[in-house]
Image (cartoon, rainbow, N blue to C red; front, side, top):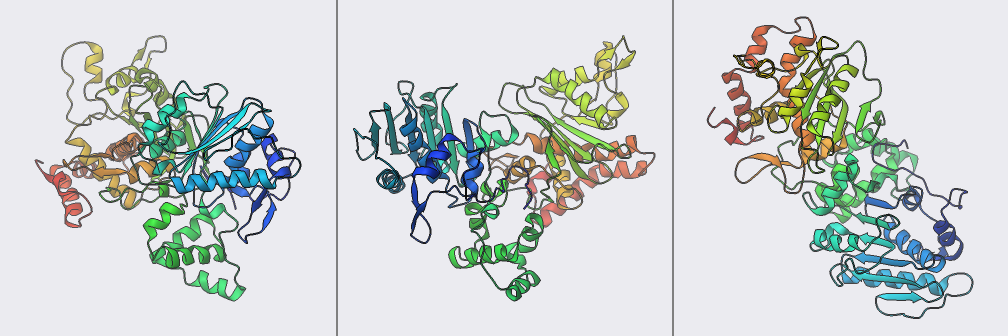
Length: 555
């Protein structure tokens, strides 16, 4: 199976390869494990464990499907380091007491049944093991049972099922303070538990490349054991009768699944989850977005999202769809501007005008508004002098000013003025030259324009527009109607990519008129933005109960 964005599809290994880490060598050479047939066998890393071992990073966050063996791997790795590396202080924290007892029992099983001489153990308590010959210690506990802080020293920290911890932000703050910033090893893993919590926020930051953790997503379909062994006739029958109610046609096509995988998935949904597809997606996610589903209130209920290996990360901040830019095509860039202080991100979403397909995405929460203007200009020229619609209020004021600066040495503006969205009703009046030049340039986001922007994006994504970014898809899934009637990101979530994509939908009609010789008539442009068209568009959504009715108020 091919690799997809933000996923791993490593297959099981039966031998330790030459690329194995020292910890893997110890694990596979010394430790036994009980397999699913309740047999004691040598510990050989499975596909998920191999994928983790091969990352070689010190900080990793792992959203995953159930029972991939992630915690087992980190328990064995921590023990291997305690036995082989002086002054190791390993800590593993679970979400509840029963899980903690199971983890401690597994570590003691490794020790009691390991090959060769047994290690000398000084402390052997309910939550701690110490190894005096290495001056090492291994603590296994439950979230909240013990407070950690700057006075502690942790070399190896693993946090299990963090999405189910009580108050994870506070607990993780203390734990992270106890780990060395330069040499400490930190791993965090969990199945999803809704959107807006600390774990969800950290995963999305990692997916954007803006956090300190590397993201490794482990979907259910990359696990070789998650399939049934069926005769060929039954496989043919399954593929001929895919169940739409379980989303099987899309899942089969998107992830190139086998009939054996479809059959296993169907069995779990029907026999274990009582047909609950929402619960399946949470426990056995196929893509990152499945891990963090918003329960109700979501604006974007239908999105044409296509996961593809052609969606490639070109650097820390930029993703581009292979085959673009294409000299024969025209492009639109939507820009959402942030302060550049490590919180909200400045985002450029790039779409092809002819195909209505997402072809690029730039995300950076450290770039300042003036620097973002230069990035917009560079992306615009890269994509055939794309049409740019960028926020012009708040931090966007500076971005628009730099984007439209006049370069006297080249006798031209930084970016062609004809390729920047200008509010149709704007009028340049007296005053300084730059003030006149900036009049009306960019998109002013306010309580009146934002609902229209989101309404147009919602319509596009449910009909003709196709997106490939899992980050945008995730932010769309957590973009909701709040209790006060406003729309925006759910608590603890982000909507920077949503707003940038909304800019594209908002300026698309004018972009078409600017980029292509009379592709549509001026009357069509006028109708798109007329008061009647706005009311009609939003009223349709209201009558179909797919968009909040408040959006038609005061228009």
